[in-house]
Image (cartoon, rainbow, N blue to C red):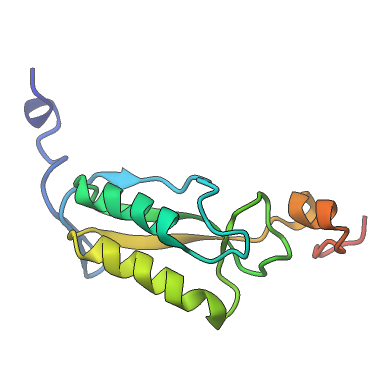
Length: 131
């Protein structure tokens, strides 16, 4: 039995709060570690998300992004999302995803006391309570 018969709505558009997705396929937020060492979105990560959009994904959830980069990063090569210096690469990701008809959102992250990149670099942890 085909997926179209078992899940007839899977390939159909859906509108959520005014945003229409071309289908109900979603790429979950995962840590690809494809960002550049400075947290920017270079060619590698741009191509990664563009390929998912080209393949038919309706909604792409950009991987965990550091809202205080480089502080509070939970992994190396994490996407930075904390100031305007990240906008050129992020803009390219969005444009390349939209070119193929997909939508994109971001998972905002602050890793708090488990910010391994802060620990490795010897930076103080940004947490609400001292350890």
